Amino acid sequence: MPRRLAAGLAALSFLAAAAPTAASARSAASAAPAETARATRQAGTTATRVQFALPTKDFPLGQPGPVTQKKKSVTKGIDFFTVVHGEATDGYTVSVLMNGKDYGSREQADAAAEAVQAAGLPAGIQEFTRPAVADYPAGVSYMVRVGMWKPEEKAEAGKIAKKLGEAGVKAKVDFLGDDGFQTTGPWDMRVLTVDPRVFGGSYHASLGTSVAKRETTSSMAKKAGAVVAVNGGFFNIHTDKNLRGEPVGVSVVNGRLLSEAVLGRSALILKGRTARISEVATAVTATSADGEKTVINGVNRAAAADELVLYTEEFGEKTPADEGAEAVLDAKGQVLELRPAGGKVAAGTSVLHGTGIMADWIWSHAWENWSLKITTKVTDMRSGKAIPLTPETSVIGGGVGLVRDGRERVTAQADGQANINMILRRHPRTLAGVTKSGRLILAVVDGRKPGVTVGASMIEAAHVMMWLGARQAINLDGGGSSAMVVKGKVVNHPSDGVERGVGDAVLIVP
Image (cartoon, rainbow, N blue to C red; front, top):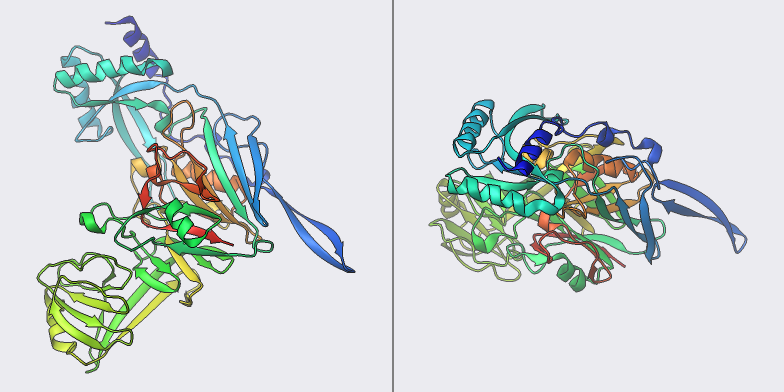
């Protein structure tokens, strides 16, 4: 056995088996940013100016120590921070795949370890715990790993992975900092804070040129004249290739519902210079001139069997040609045309698209020159009140709720992310939060750059946002989508190496 491999296997037993420990679970309350009022005299009156600074110590991840940060004023009321902490100590290992994943049951791990040994290499079985979150219990899984190598020895790990592949054992090289276990980092973050009492502009959402197409955050920011922007929520990469800009969950842009909510999922709600985070529900209905009322199942997405989907002029693609039926409506809801499925959505119109029995509903209740009343309602589930859909209103669906009322509350199951990869593993993250005073915090934690920055797990992201002073916080899309734009420039380091086209974005416009 090669000496390096033997040493690596000996070290494997010392890997942390439990996910984020006390270092990432410390309360961030004592490190919350300082917001202090300073009184100044102006023309005989007293005005209050709020000073804001990020913490300089007690970073909630990794080892204790000073936090390196730089601050720059972007414009009146908006500050930009670069935050760096930690040091690189993690190396590499080789993980054996079980049914395409790098973890599995004990039975699967035993079988995978036997396959590695049959290939002439020793294997270590590592038990680990995916931590519990607010709505999903902890779980135990197993990994099969071969060796450990220093950061500069990645190529050696690659040789072992290749040898296993030649023996018919699927394996990959893994950076240990991605695991979600104890690490020293490092972390490289970009943080924007917006004081609505000083900033004179407004917050918006954008879907770019259309719902169906993806566009970079910087492109959306440039078109809107935004001074700063970050990428928005998740988008659907599992639909037709022409529709992959479609948000997964709620999207309201300028008061228009462009994608329906997934019931109970978290969202960032923007209006003017106010921001809040809540869970939302949407309800869209159609009422025919003959009094027949029915639920519209979706907005600007592919229809499933026996569904009604509404396509708005922002859709940007032809409707799917799926043998359904369509009613073309003008801005007042009058039926201009009945047609088979698959056509353009012209400016100033919308299209009600039905499949299966709902195609029959269209043929029966949407005759030409009749009218259809389309009713749209978006509800804040925490307050139970409807969200007024004014031209100032935007809503962006998030990936996972992180912080509620100043405490960690990761809602992975409700937000469709209850798995090891999303809860435990470290990835680049885009985060949004609101402080007690109403200040908006936007943060990007870069990741997937061994030796430079490791990213964050969801639990770690929650504690970072509490450290930044957020009373409410949400996880937006991350990974290669994470991008922060300041005055037209991408100021973080997207993990793809270049800025990725995304479904939507949060824009701050002067």
